Length: 214
Figure: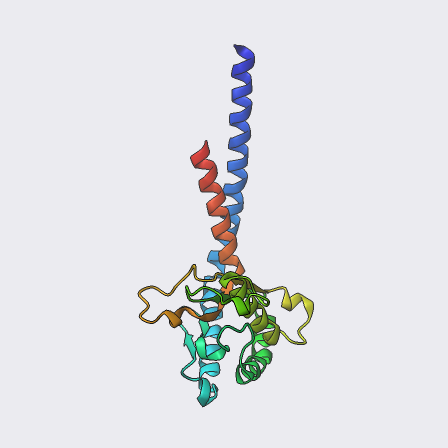
């Protein structure tokens, strides 16, 4: 009986120790985050200014096909920026992505906490048989579109900056809520986020999981 009791106490102490470490890490991150709250607002304002500048310089031919949201801090490349059933952006879109390249690089250099996420999305229509030589399904198509967009954004960047631009392909799995036309979901989104906020979320999820499993 004593051995079983001692083992239970040891496991309990171990779990308590893990939780204590996570709580300390969380507090450290929160203190850092609180201390830099003004800087966070400054960072978001910098991104908003960047997006407004990009919007003001869009080619007339792309103004209907590129949506810029300064509140959500994202750029949405809509259906007209890619050839139908093709993972490659149009020639004009390629040039536009290259034009954004220097400004994005400058913004990343100024703010080491900034990360850029390039996310591909498609409609729910099945991939045509004739296209399956290039991509087998919509998830792969969306990932290829995100990858190609990223490639033009980060041309000639140093490696340490390229590593802060991630990609993902969601296929049809993340449609725009309450969309009217199916082709609305064909898009590539370029999101601007901050790594400090991501660290807090990760620690909170781990702590919540441990508390529930205790």
